[in-house]
Image 1 (cartoon, rainbow, N blue to C red):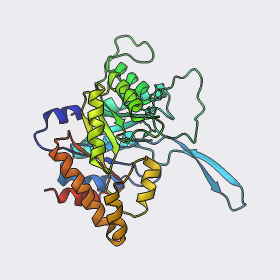
Image 2: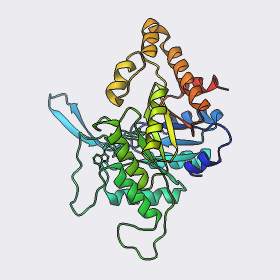
Image 3: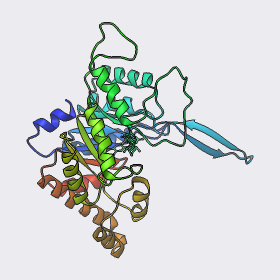
Image 4: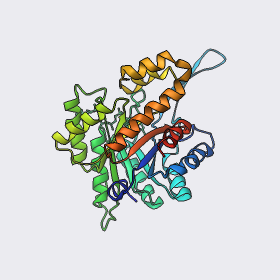
Length: 314
Ligand code: FAD
């Protein structure tokens, strides 16, 4: 079922979960074990992140430096196929513009369709450290909006090469939104202006970047509605479990922590796990009371604390 259908038909609160593929060379059980632990919480859908290739530098024993370019976490499409077919849970495949040609994207969409996967999250990606060399005859998407347009086209049966009697695909498309604005945007209003372009290009729903102060989400939703964005806006929640995340998370995701949360953690650093779980549970309860379309948890590769947040809600 499509994400938008889950949201439209919901009669009780929905929860969705985002996980990452295992590192290259590791077993898929790392992912399937997480999915098994999430089953008691009836996942409405599971997102699997995408990763473009990056450049990595290894110092060799002779002192020379070797530059290697590879994907650290390949396998997004395959993992979605496994989760959907083994656990009967709908999956959302993340697709990136960066690192992929339009031809590669079209191939991925065809493959997803064969696997029975009809949900994708269209993203730009952040892999600015490595620019793949492209054959200039190959087309590329740049912004996420360009990718949404390409998916909308295949949904109408319009492929890159003019294929006669082409088969229309059927994807539900999500896009990312940033309650505290995307780090490259000059201000929130401009970011929302471009977010509306993604929706106008065919996006069915928005999932937000993590936030730790619900008022930021509520204000963002109000501003999106004022800008004419009417699609569901799913809030993203991250459970904090280590003190160093108070500096790492703002550095990587450009979000703020509320004073009260920071103060509580610094007064009791030995209890950070419990404090993080309680904070995320308070956020989730308030969001559910406000009838949000679903709560999306950034599980990544460890679901134990997310499970504790959800256990406290039942
Ligand atoms: P875009 O929507 O393209 O926006 C990027 C920036 O460009 C914004 O500042 C926007 O305001 C601006 N902009 C947009 N259109 C224009 C225009 N026409 N002219 C000028 N400026 C414009 N990254 C991964 O690598 N893999 C993942 O699996 C992944 N999953 C994610 C899931 C969620 C829910 C979220 C919130 C983020 C995820 N990311 C992931 C991170 C994401 O790729 C980065 O945040 C990236 O920097 C922006 O992606 P976007 O799709 O929001 O880009």
